[in-house]
Length: 325
Image 1 (cartoon, rainbow, N blue to C red):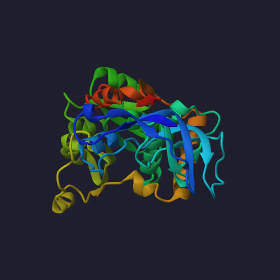
Image 2 (image 1 turned 90 degrees about the vertical axis):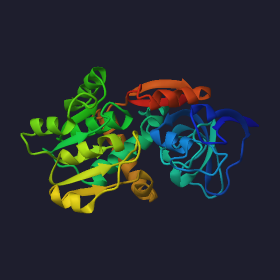
Image 3 (image 1 turned 90 degrees about the horizontal axis):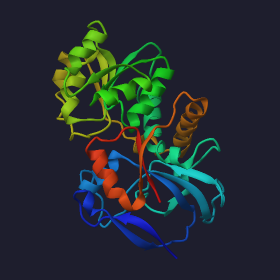
């Protein structure tokens, strides 16, 4: 038996992604075979495709998906055939009709959450949970600055942070995205391409600045993020959509008010299976309560993965982008 999967044998643009037939492999001890129903597309996939985060080639691509268990290997007791499951932290190779994964990477899906919603939410949602609850616990009444507020992570974070009692200032790229961000929890929006971000933050906060900035953009917003922080504030850099941020001058952090800088990785925070599943349970609770509503901006066929990447790189997307096998 064979199934379809996306592979690439050289780094480069979206056209390096190829749809190929692969032999279906049986799950080994501790592994689970899953027939996928939906697959998440994330910026980390672009980093892998371009070689920014190098992979041994040839390689699969994708770290997030949801589907139904086909078969399980020896010593697997967490799930059984027919169970609905999702995953969000790899291993790499999720752009496929069928995957075989270690059971410790899987999370059982509640009946109320669709495979499509899960595929668009697991990696992003676990990231948001870690950012708001583990990297730095968000406090009720705080005002935060969130870049790319209309993106996949941004729409989840703005809703979740707002539900926790925070005031969210969202940086977006267009008036349309500003309206979307406001509909999903942002109290204020800033047009990052035409407005001075730090000046607007100071206006909104009566000159105080914010205690924390969440920045997934990288190079283009680095200085604005630091300039937006209050003394003792924290700059949380968790992405590089515009390229990697410059090196941090430790002395400059002191001059700016004893700032903190961190570069969290969800792979580190989810490396412990119990912590990952606790984070997933937290995510599912806010989804089921309605505090956070999934936003699937666009869907593509698995064969059109290259088109999905072009759309994401061009910043044409809002919410989550999902492939359908």
